[in-house]
Image 1 (cartoon, helix red, strand yellow):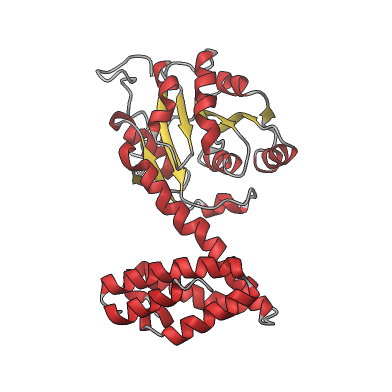
Image 2 (cartoon, rainbow, N blue to C red):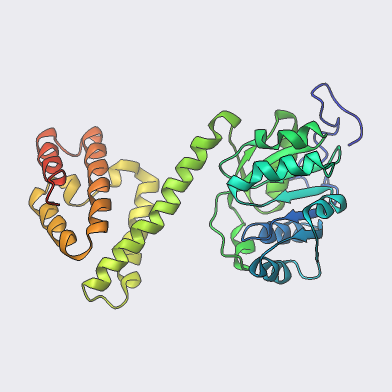
Length: 315
């Protein structure tokens, strides 16, 4: 990693070789973790399982320190510049909005070394946010695990087969993909210019799914169901599986059928029991009706009647 190629990156832009070739294993790296929230310790632990060595980590809160002690036992907790001083590979696992300032600060203080691999795990950013580190000679990689994390050892096992959104300079693509494979993941290349769209899709699907399911559970409790999860689990599992296989063709229910009377009764119930959920129901029902019309499962006339009901002010 000492000489440079025509793009300004080290000539060994593929120091890992073929990650699937057991005879061509990557060089073992000293790994540092900046930010010991839910993601960093799990990725560090996965890299240790692959034979790398986590040498230092940083964490501020008591919870972060506990996670580091649980998943990275014996690893010393130091300041971010000290982490970089000890590591060949640095994982920056901090919140999206804190990343740019962190990178700029570390580069400005001379903490970044030429040839150092600097990885961030933000879904919202590509490799461009690492530009200050790149100017200092670092190798910039954006590796986003498309997974929710608990901050426990369960996360390490969940990385097996986990997709990672990978964004990096083309010269470093083999390095990025090799690291993902070593952590047990599956690399999915995401060009820099669509990184924000990629993250929007994941956040819309995963985060809003949590809200949607939690609202459904709340309504079932109001209806006297003691264990809403047991009732919803099979239904939602089948709906998710069908949708992943068939897309909009998996749609069922009163909106897809144009059952205006049923939708009106739903809105009446929500206006009484949970008006805030009623707003979400109306928004999702409108979107559902529009997709059903585009897909041909709902005719224009019942769709218009549905939209009239959904737009009535009293609801």
